[in-house]
Image (cartoon, rainbow, N blue to C red):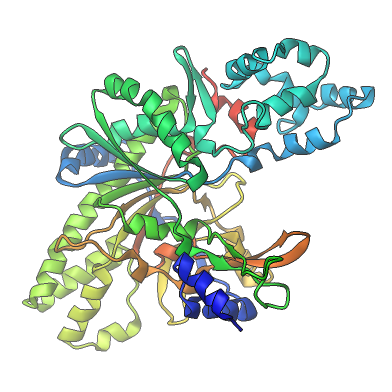
Length: 517
């Protein structure tokens, strides 16, 4: 199937031929659906805390975090082009007819192009756009008055101006302040100063970026770094990494044969955010907060975000400390029946670990071995918000092919919604995954886990794409916060809805949560 040139191409990217053969087999057979058994809900898989309890957990984090290496991890490599889909489509079609102008004026839909133009001055990038246009002897207000939206969009979206459609979200202006506009990455610098600093007042961040944009990231951070360091009385330790070429996946045609370029070379595509488990695995930190680049709010709404980041962090530290104490006991082997019962109770009730009926038949050493293996894993706490119609994944109880039950974040693409039983379980779900994680990635002996050992390879998915006018199938690796962390100790915590404010389209920045007041 593969020529010498194919093998050399794989070797150049760091991809093993047997991995490619496995991918082709998966294209042919497909990924199995996740078997849901129940939605995770408050009292059944989602932990909830009173205001007083939340404050106590946050205080615990503040008091103890300096005993750990804490870092903030932000996937920031994705291009922002999807944010501007409706504007790009409008630009291709708009001819400036009176009928089109009337339609724009009448269109009251929040997500519409007309709404975008009517509220242009409310965007944080407004002054930058005016400045760019003025450099070409153009006046923004006059373009709007003349309904010359094509010129305006050309300077906003394309290389001749701000190039927003080609930049990553991190480098777009999101929020306006009296002292000026902040880009998305700047808001993460601000957050890190509040919960990812060590005893030496150094805030640790890591951004995953695309190779073509890394120098722009570095230039932008260099421009504002001293301002924020002086503002918060800290210093930043900022790292970057790119998705590894070895995590790319082969594309195939509709007959599941390798898809090739016109020169005969194989087509490989990025494996999705699940590939970032490799980047996460390379970080030198014990406690890692993970949050998407676009889920940010202005300073005026940030206190609740800080509080619940610390709630997650404080609970994680408490649970990890107890887990390590029990692992020390199990590792020594000097555990009596009463202690075994106590450890089981902790694992079952506090860590939500499933115990199969056969556990009752185990002898003492088999129980020790079972408990040790279940406790000696990376741990993650994931914030969950009440579902108000957002598309995407959520928290569920699932069962795998070994009849093991666990808490997992499951994407809609992994669900068999043609099955009425599965569909009814999904219909009862109450919460949504906002990607709000804190992870513990070191074991009880102070050594780092190899996170690639805890991935479930059966939890990727296949999507249909096209290239050069030809259809192809592309494979996404198990997602970073679902399949890539499938074998982690997992707990869900309800967090307030105000902590989830993603920007999926440019008009989302007009929502009150992203406005100055």
